[in-house]
Image (cartoon, rainbow, N blue to C red; front, top):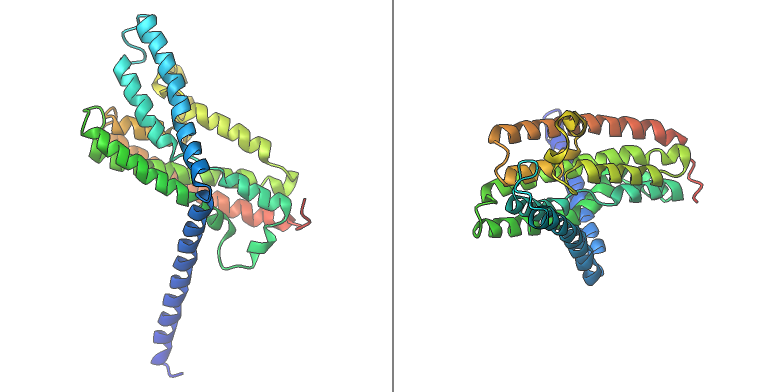
Length: 283
């Protein structure tokens, strides 16, 4: 090979390599979506149940406080504003999380991780891509519902809804990064299920899924603001409802970006360190 041909050859190989990387990511997304929707009725019931059961509980609570209890405003929210928050937060709750960090933990515990170590796909990213596929589909459905709702009410803004879904997807990335770091405990304890469950319960409380975080006492604000969890549901909901300014939203995106970068480094470091303890004995 001549010196003139070498750069072109290297450029061609780099292009092929990039194509392969993109190909397996697309394949992982497709495989994850087909796996999640293999039983379509079950998938639909799971989504509907996760959305409407909490909404019904919250509606009963707001009705009891405002209509029966006679409250005019709670935490700066009127009755109709609370209902708007409940409806909008449900859309972002569906984007949040997923159980793929549990899948990653089980791969370590059960020994099936060995099947992926020699493949060109990174294990952590591969599991995330599979779990992300149904969440992207749900995010699209939630966005469609939010935009449609904006035509019938002034409470929700269509353009803000689009941006808010983007922030919710960033929250989904952060959620999985934290879960994948916790999953490495399975290299040491053989079981990280309990820790992941505790993490999910804390997230449910501090992400704004159960209650608007503005209902927390003002002197506790630092608690939820010191975590990235409020970026999952509360932040997107506040922006979609017009309760956050554009400057606050941009600041939230910047904070989310810093969390993603920092946690990405921790994911790489924790797996690189923990994989040395992997014995592939199975469970």
